[in-house]
Image (cartoon, rainbow, N blue to C red; front, side, top):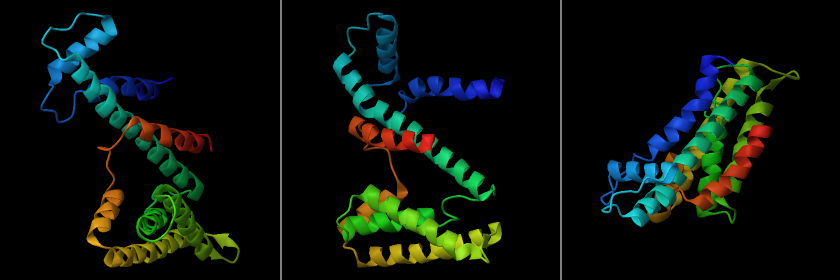
Length: 208
């Protein structure tokens, strides 16, 4: 195992504890987190002024789920991107270029406003539909070239982006805000239940 490969395994073990020190809080500071980590790791008695239940709540119920979700999502995006590039055999290929992201965003917007479907399921189905359209549009004489695949992806992406714009235009402002937040993405609402809901699909994706 090379040093570079070793770093890929070691860095997360270093970055996860360090990430617990990052985040806005008016009730605890970095020294409180340090004392809590030392207390939990080595059993050293924390200062009497330390509000242990409050620090534990902030770390275990707020920050740690966000950190774990960030690592899981980052790993999923990395794996899916590498898989797309390997399948298409082009290092420039990515979800936006194939229409996948636009299709998923359109599906999520429909689920939030029109369809009686879970947002994740709708986004997945329309993302799959977008990639399928890209593939079938790229077929020429029974073959699919890299150039035709990319050009088809641009067309499909434009179609679903236009559809998303129409959905946003016809949606009331309160629901529109939810669509914009979903497209932008965020981790500030991450909870342990959210971690449990994404870990199984991500592991299945890794195996595939």
